[in-house]
Length: 239
Image 1 (cartoon, helix red, strand yellow):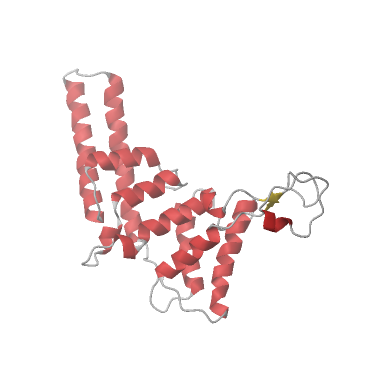
Image 2 (cartoon, rainbow, N blue to C red):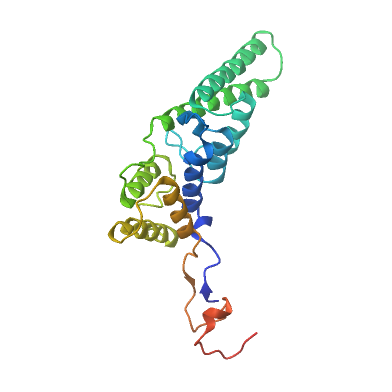
């Protein structure tokens, strides 16, 4: 089989990571009217990012996306770094107190007590992740170049991305992402408006919506593609 790849860059692990992060940090859709930077840290957007892509926690291990989603919901987190810190800390303390009380009174089984301690530890791990993420530099806005924004994105990917798709050339998806980011960096050399974060996000998402590349070798096997891509080709049989 040959033809354009059925997979877009947005569907690769690196593509999902990028789209999730940019959606999470987009000030235009997640800041309140007062312009509070902490309002970017909404629970639903962070959960969507860590459950939908390969995110690395502060300890260098993969984020427990599904567990973090459940824990933050149980803890009552809505938005804001202070809310994440306070509610996750309180949730972890409640779980540990519950487990210690059950152990002293010989209540519940060992499995339940172990599950509470595990959830408490994961709550602390999530709290540390959000605290570190809050210290990261915001996307540059004023007098930033296209390359500045690409460099900012790559810096965050090194810290929070699992497989390093923006820095290595180990497979086709990684090469495609590198090429897309390099093309965006090159916009500085032509007469286009200076980037804002929203313009950068839209431009990058347009690049990510492109297919990876071709599958197979043209002229060999079955060609599967939109009709417009068959112009000028010679076929033995057409279905």
